[in-house]
Amino acid sequence: MPGEKNLEQLKIEKVESLQAPVEKIPVPENRTEKILPNEAKTSEAPKPLEKTGEGNIVATSQAQAYQKQQATAIDNILSEGLNDIYLKMKPADQSAFKKKGEETVTKINALLGQTKVKISKIVDLIRRWLQLIPGINKFFLEQEAKIKADKIIRLKDK
Image (cartoon, rainbow, N blue to C red):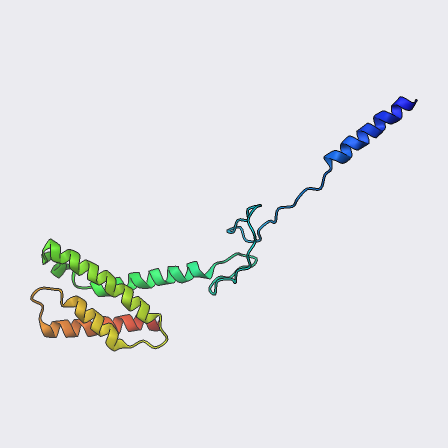
């Protein structure tokens, strides 16, 4: 039965040839990153605000959500009581007033992110924005800027 041994040897050789070593592709721990098989892996330092681990929670998105919420609150404070004045303005003045208001919100939001908040800078930003209103009373402007700045500072304290 020499023919049977040849069959068994052939089967074993075929199975061994099929079991060639398989190259393993690294699996990323964090589902947001992708590793391509031909890509060289570089060692990057983790981002300072990024927290990785079991939950894969990213702190940057939380910070961005907080900044966005704070910007909305600042925008609400600044637009408080100015609806009638805004509607009486010309369309060109309205667009300039709106654009300057958005810039003011962004700058105030950045100022509130600092450790020391200078209320004089916030009052100055609000005053410059309110000066775009045609025919505004100088005393009303000062009073309104200070009131709005105080409300914004209270927002920071919360």
